[in-house]
Length: 82
Image 1 (spheres, rainbow, N blue to C red):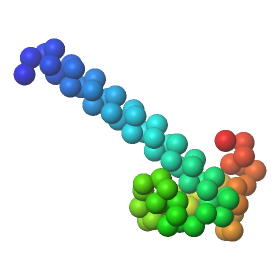
Image 2 (image 1 turned 90 degrees about the horizontal axis):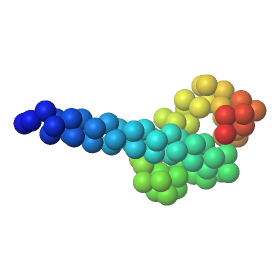
Image 3 (image 1 turned 30 degrees about the vertical axis):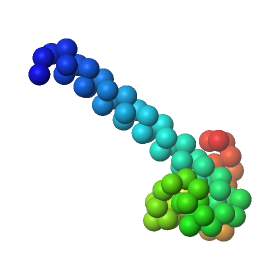
């Protein structure tokens, strides 16, 4: 493979990673907002095309970080981040 081809492939991979990261952050914010609005994990997973276990993971981490209460309501900390 030529140097030009390698550069193209690397740029393409970086572009994909950037897009994936941006979508991941957006989905985390969407998950938190949906949880705050009382949407069930399975419904969030279905709506956002992620697994219920991923929603659960985000929920647990947000509670641990003080972003969500145990009742899945956004805290003041999260309101400042949104």
